[in-house]
Length: 170
Image (cartoon, rainbow, N blue to C red):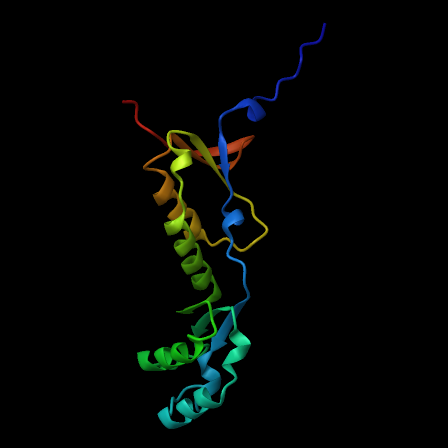
């Protein structure tokens, strides 16, 4: 008589936490300030302000915007602030940095607001693979959020996980 095959993964109390489920919806746009600089390097305040005033900011409605400069130009803080002041009415969020920096900021906001009390004293596995651009920092943010409350933390898939943390025995 053949023994029944038991799916121990399905029967375990292990909770899978998928960061991809918390991916903020919305368009991501990178805005290169070098296009508004003389020869891509020199910021002339008057010209910069005129371009900012004439630009159609409505195209960034409900988008997440990353401000950066693709050249080695030295951009003063006020230039980023000026662009942000124009985007304020339209964009959901504006940061100075790359699109990856933007994703990190978005995930940090989401994770800070996340209620994870239902995971208290449970074994949790943080899913590793994703189809959306989950930044490396998001995994660090979620470790900081979960470790103080969970029984254990693992990374990967239930069938092949990497142990990260186990609550000390009391």
